[in-house]
Image 1 (tube, rainbow, N blue to C red):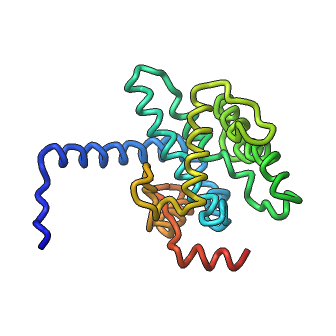
Image 2: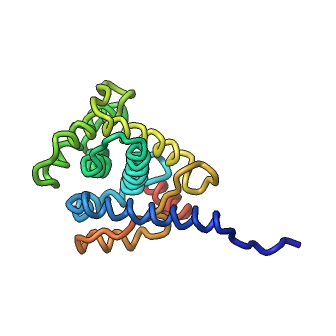
Length: 219
């Protein structure tokens, strides 16, 4: 017989800190990424398969969420980071993948060319795209392809978060326990799409396994 669980004070404090951090990250994404979140491109991102099991939108939110979390950790070590640039760069880094079957003749071409295309998309969405955000987007594929290495801490943060999130996408990371950062957008796909249409992003979502299988059959 399993004994009832009683939450200790320290466990409660840890849980509350995690919840507080999650809300702060959501707030940063909404504040600094509002133009991207309200765009038609972000809405489309949740309808395109990416990394086999995910969508461009789901992957984008994993990267953005993880990137901001890393920034919080760096700030605790008194390392200055530009969170607004990180948010914009992370949210825009793969928007050049939208319509990939029409834009690119092969997967290799998509890998090599989508960073530049993502910069072009970002410039259409964001008024006065920060130079640092542009660099983050353009160099996020490093060390893959022909990408140059990031020339800023912010660029390195997003590049690392991108590779980590890509692995989670491939292995259905949000369904695998104890793999690190959880996908906070799980189960809220319709909610964020409706919020994006209204120009107010309040959360994110992830497809269920059945939805992903249906999506795979379409492609």
